[in-house]
Length: 304
Image (cartoon, rainbow, N blue to C red; front, side, top):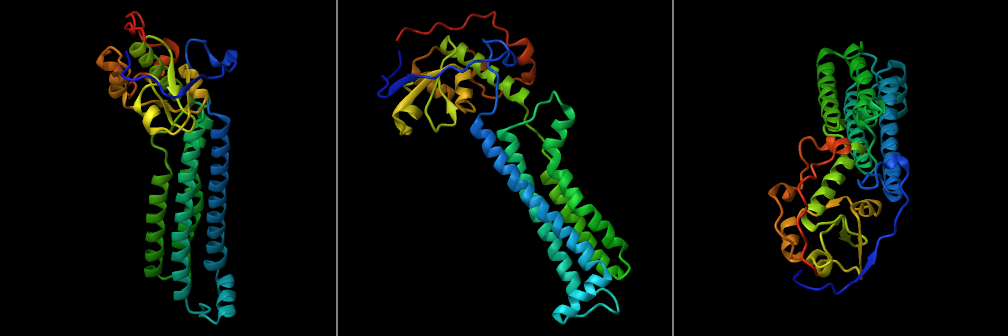
């Protein structure tokens, strides 16, 4: 018996038709919601804008500063040293500023792109697209830096000291930006689906049925309507009940991490410890095809 009765209205989640591509009706299939796709699209647009500006600054550095004729025109226009006897100091400072700016734009674009990939990840079924989509930040960073760094070391107007200063700064900034741009643990539709199926197994093991609760605006779903995050913390007037698949369709990311607290508040029997761990097993992606061993009957839930 739950510790307290729900004081909020409980409504049933609307059902969404599932196509053959969604798999069996008994297993949830993760998919990005339309809102998540919209946010991901906007983030990717801003990331591309950052990268375009970065490549534009790279082009200016190459054709405006490293090119002796263009550099002389800039010097004349502003009354600076035209560089008749080498690479002028103002051009070196300007070049370093551009390198730092390119790095900042590349990193900003990479972070925005990574965020978009978590909202709308790629599928591993297309390995080429999966790699490019997840590592595009690192790829663009190399494009925005490598030609510039190479041309700095090959520039005939710079002395060795200037090449060392600009070249080393360029290599260091590029390395940092590339490392940040790499997605070391890229998400995938298959991984999210397996995690959702693991959550479903946990819910069934703990409550005896595939039924969870959430509120509009919340990030996760819960084991029963009486838990404090829904009754006390949330200001929503309605609590929605449905399957794990329904929660995914509503944009909820996962089962709450406060499982033990909710078991106590819902008055549920104590499950095996394996179901208390929110992290999926190491072979989580095998759940998609093999499922979790369900030969052990789920615990009986006391009548409420």
